[in-house]
Length: 368
Image (cartoon, rainbow, N blue to C red; front, side, top):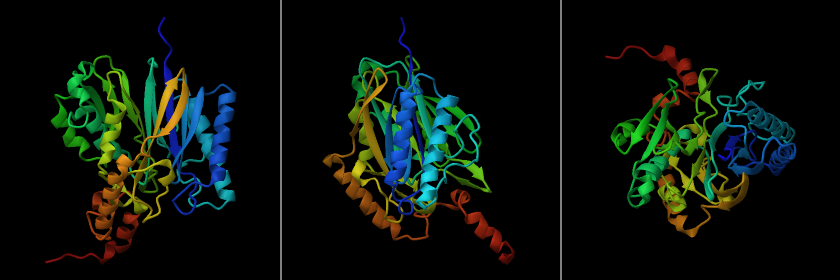
């Protein structure tokens, strides 16, 4: 008899910052935890963990209702609404800023929060890594996912593990035109790199094992929510990666973060900076509202129960990555409002830049 599939849902949002955009007040975390505990006791979910990075709260849940389930998404939405009420009472900054509507419409995707979900049959041993990032965008996962599942210089398993020789399929989403394409790697590696090297628009959404189509990684791609002429709700990306047994080993999944690659986000979502891997006790970005950072939560699933988390980046072997990130941050900050520290104009369209351009449009006149 086939085992019933488990669903792992990670839904994250910024519903109020303490102080500014740097942290989450303990009362908001307490409210989220109590709502999750109630959902478990009511039988809506099997198990949960309340995650956090920067000023974002993450609801990590297991259940058997499948991805995009209206009951799960409604629960997440209502939980964030209740956390927002607490944030407003405490006058927290940007209370409810990721809730881009007054009412839940059946699916939380595109409404502000970041959502990553996957459905699979739990293996005898099921290591799962959940990454939460703050002050960056979903395209930040392109580089590490490519390294994990396509680069043998990172993942030696691609060479020495016969179960990985056939490679992986990558779903890449176009966030502007709302289209997707499936690339088969390694044979379409160069074609895919043309697109994922532009992470502000093209984002790896899912990675699947070619042999059986089993899901290996899932990310949030809820970057673009067009509100009042600008795109907001873009700096709360989450990612789920399964590891071992025909998939990259845990160490191979973590290895890409030893290089703090440059991502978009940071101050006002308008700057480039290094993505710094940090432990749970270093997840509060304050320098220029940054630099962008990522935490890694490691779990073993056991019949749907989340055994963990382990703090995967609380390891001295990431000290050099953190030092490099700080050196890069120093260098980029010296550029101030100049590119490449500031995002290029085509990306600044999604900030308040159009308001400035509109105000000055009549000042421009033909030049010789």
